[in-house]
Image (tube, rainbow, N blue to C red; front, side, top):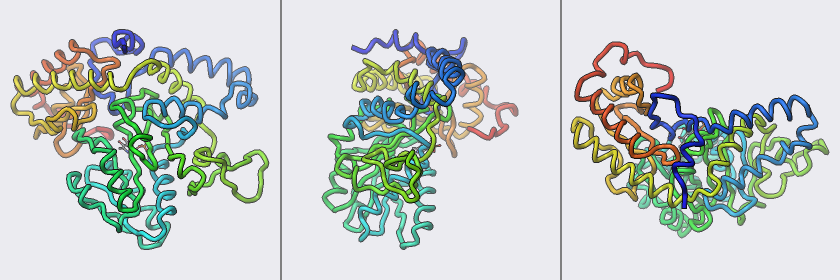
Amino acid sequence: MTDFTTTKSRFHLPQGVTYLDGNSLGPLPIAATTRMAEVMQEEWGEMLITGWNTAGWMAQPGQLGDRIGRLIGAEAGHVMLGDTLSIKVYQALAAALALRPDRKVILSDTGNFPTDLYMAEGLIDTLGQDHELRCVAPEEVEDAITEEVAVLMITEVDYRTGRRHDMARLTQKAHETGGLVIWDLAHSAGAVPVDVTGGKADFAVGCTYKFLNGGPGAPAFIYVAPRHAEATAPALSGWLGHAAPFAFEQTYRAAPGVARMRVGTPPVLAMASLAAALDVWDGVEMTQVYARAQELSERFIKGIEAACPMLTLASPRDPHARGSQVSFRFEHGYEAMQACIAHGVIGDFRAPDIMRFGITPLYLDEGDIDHAIEVVCKVVTGHLWNDDRYRQRAAVT
Ligand SMILES: Cc1ncc(COP(=O)(O)O)c(C=O)c1O
C-alpha cells in the first residue's frame, strides 16, 4: 500500500505555498540535493573523466529508462533516456514512418501539444516525400484512423483539459488498419497507470520533469516495442547510438535495440536529480496514485463549483476520462492565476482562458486541496485578480 504521508515528507515544499503545478514541473525531492552534491563532489570532482566507467555514468540512460519503464508498463531493456521530448518525438516519428514507407498520413489531434505537431512539420519538410499531417478534433480521432494512416501520433492526456484518450482502443484500431502508434506520455508518466506492453504501443515518449519530478530540463525517455527494436532507424544517428561508439568507425552502425535511440553525451548532473526523484517512486503503485488523484480531483471540482460558479470545468467530468489535472475556464484566467500565485497557490495558465491545476498525490493531501479551493475562490469572487500587477504577461505562463 502506498504511504502518501511518507512520499510527501520526501519533497521540499516551500513554506506558505500550495503547489498544484506538478503537471508542469514537479517539486524538489529532498534527496536530490544531496545526490547532486555527491555526484558533483565525489564523482565529477574526484573521479574526473574516469566517472564514465567508475561511477557508471554511461550506463545510466538505460538503467533510469528501466525504472521509468516500470511506471509505464514497458518490458525491461526497452526504454532509453536522453535529450528533450521534442527530439524523442522526432526520432519516434521518423522511425515509425520508415516502417510504413507506402503510407503518407500522420494522424494527430488538435489537443496535441504544439511541439509534437511542429516536429512533424519539420520532419515532413526534411523527408520531402509528400507526407501529410492530418489533425482532427480529439473526439474524431477514432473515426479518422483509416488505411491511409501511416502513424497515429497522439498525446494520451491533453495538456490543456486533462482529457484522456483510450490508448488500447485507438492502438488496436490503428493496428487493424495497418498503421503504427506513437504515444506521448508527457502528462501520463507518473500520473495515470500506463501499460505500453498490454496496450501494444509501437513507440512511446515522455518527459521526466513533470509528474516524475526529475527537475527543470530533466531528460526525456523513449520506448520502442521489442517487435520493432531491431528494425528502427533512429534518424538522429549520433555516436552514442552506434554499435561501438569507441571504435570511432567512419560510418554509422546502429546499436542493438533501443540503445540506438541514444544520440550524444548523456546529461550526468540532470540524471543525478532524476535518480533521486525515481527513488521516491520505488514501492509506489500507479493504480493507487491514480485512485488517490481522482479522489482529490473530485474534491477540488466539487469545492470550486460550489463556491465559485464563474469557473467552468474544462476537464471531463468523468474521472476515468481525465488524467491527473483539473482545468477550469475563466475569462480572466491569466490574471486570476497570477493572483492565486501571489496568494500562495501555484497552478498555471494555458491560452486562451484555462486555469490548470495538477493533482499530484505524492505530495498533495485534502488539506492542500481545501486550502487551494479557498484561495482560488477568494481571488475570483473577491475580484482580487483585477489589478494591473497581474496583467503583465511573463515569458512563461
Ligand atoms: C505533451 C507534450 N509533449 C511535448 C512537450 C515538449 O517537451 P520538451 O520541451 O521536453 O521538448 C511537452 C511540454 O510540456 C508536452 O506537454
